Length: 101
Image (tube, rainbow, N blue to C red; front, side, top):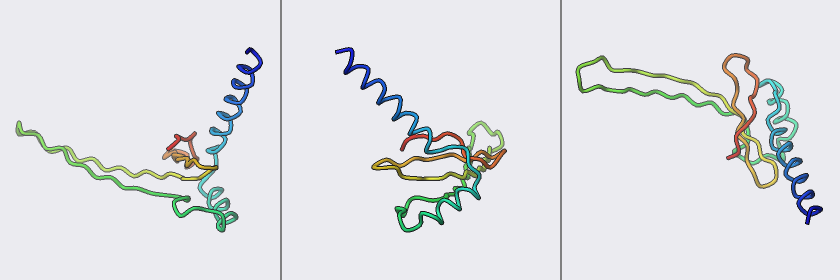
C-alpha cells in the first residue's frame, strides 16, 4: 500500500510541476514567438488576449457615481485536454503563474 501511495504522490508532484511550467515567466514577445512557431498545432482559442472592462456604480444616496476602467492581458495555451490562462503583469509585461480553466 505504501508503494502505491508513493507512486500516486510522486505522480501528483510531477503533474503539479507540469501545470506550473505551462506559464513560466515569459515576455509577450517570447509568447508571440512561441505561437508563430506552433501556429499549425494551435486551437483557435490559444493565443494572446486583451480585455477592457468599464463599470459604473450608481449610488441612490446622491453620492457621485463611481466609474472604473480596467485592461487585462492574458495568454491562453493548451496542454493535452486542458487549457491554461496565464495573466500578464501590468508592471513587468511578463506572464504570472497561471490558473487552470
